[in-house]
Length: 235
Image 1 (tube, rainbow, N blue to C red):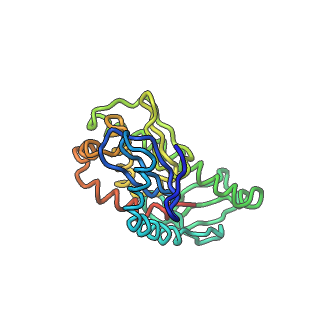
Image 2 (cartoon, helix red, strand yellow):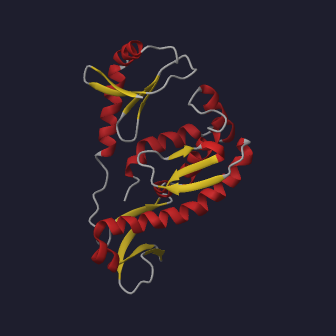
Image 3 (tube, rainbow, N blue to C red):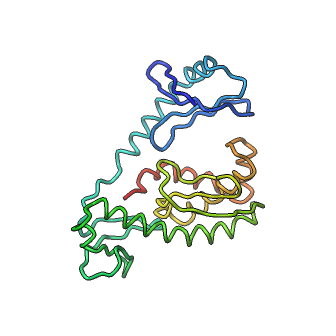
């Protein structure tokens, strides 16, 4: 992989693929990635990027608009946090044995977490909570969808994954970002099916999307929701 520039567009050139078209993606962190056909030279890829320059500008502008709405946390009573697509208000409480729990329709965060560890400790409390709950949900949903996709999964991990929602590892391993637990259940199901179908196809060719469509005919709607609202899934 290498970084190249066409005019004012900087992009990451990915290894070539067997498909005949060039895949240009605006990643969650705003990085432009380009995966060309395997026989393309870097100069040919530059020419494609040049021809798609207006499309890239438009989608980068949309990405900036979407990410401008990302919440800035103050960690005070009444702030809202998403869990399985629903918004729950935060309550700072005393004399709570655990760091964080969802109780009576509120996220109850121990004051000691903030007082002793500050905002980073508060974020860690949410990450730990979503990771724990995520293991339960992803295990259940993978067990449900894997037979429908026709694959076997050997292990599941829920962890910090930067700007990726999930990944399909080697030897039947699936990784999911703990932030997925903020999305509605139907979006979590889409992420699961998406990764399971990568066992059949490691790219995003038509053959891959056909596999997704077999299991989830409305995947386009779910995919679009994630594209539009993914930036808001944060603590």
